Amino acid sequence: MKRKTLIASGLSLALGLSVTSCANLGGLNLDTVGAEDQTTYVKLALNQTESHPSYIALDNFAQRFEERTDGRWAIEIFPNEQLGSQQEVVQFISSGAIEMAIVSGTQLENLNKDFQVLNMPTTFGSIEHQMETIRDQELMEPLFSSLEDRDNITVIGGFTQGTRSVYTKDGPVTVPADLAGEKIRVQESDMHIRMVQLMGASATPLSYGEVYTAIQSGVLDGAENNEVSYVTQKHSEVAPYFSRTEHLVGLDYMIMRSDLRDAMSETDRAIFDEEWDKAMTEHTELWAVETEEAIADAESSGATFTDVDADAFKEALAPIREEFLTTDFQNTLFDDIRATDPAETGDQS
Image (cartoon, rainbow, N blue to C red; front, side):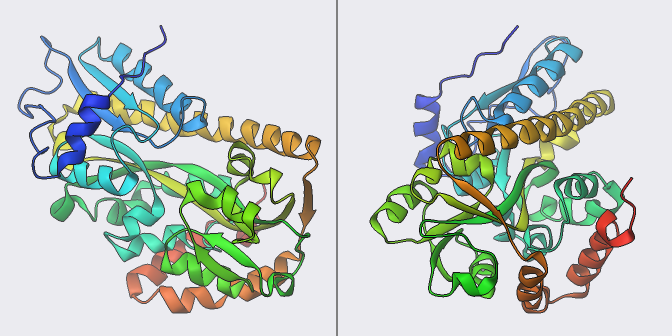
């Protein structure tokens, strides 16, 4: 049975009033969550549409979890930013107004700079390496639990954002010098601004929804993102040159109220973790299919995909580690992650 998304205009309005005033809107008695004689409803915020791989994987995850707990738990997914922006929903989880959300890495950087390690170019060699890393509980636990005491947020895992590359309106890019003078949209992150600068371009932070018209009007010369976003946002129409710099493997995090996770029974938590792991696998598979379809769609409409001098971009981005990883913990975590990359170890099996 396909779950229906709860339409949340009234709740969204209430959540938007203030973090303080919505602290009681969660309505959860942590002493009785998961009890036999009731259904515990959990709100999960997502900024993507119902057709996005994230929503599909989450919806299937919710169905499985509800079925395996005999209806004692029900996860209600609110897509399309119905519960607010990512910055807002992070605050809502911290306050107890909502229970779970998918948020980008830059949101968690604002709470703990150590998350920069996982959101930095050159950390992950591939999507496969990324997903294996975030499943490594021993390696990830210190970081994923670092927000629990202060912010009441536990990181459960994540969904890949795919490999990000540069796309431009006037011609392909093969080496960093080709980006000289180009105004490239970037996320509002100091590290990502510097990333684009090191690749040779002029970094222009801009809202995601404004990119199409900015390229069309000449305010921007291009942007950087994955193939799926490139097509779904129709950026291929105004920037038809996609250059495979693959400078970053992006990551979205699943975050959850720490007090709710602690209140779950051992049995329910084990079921939750098993089904969430399946969701990560499903999302990765869906992402691969969606990426291939996006490339085919873009090429059929006239976009071109160009390979770049990967070593030249890797060399250009090398200084970013020294500039942004400033503690022993950050540098050790980076080294430990790099040591598990099959491309580094030579294990291509």
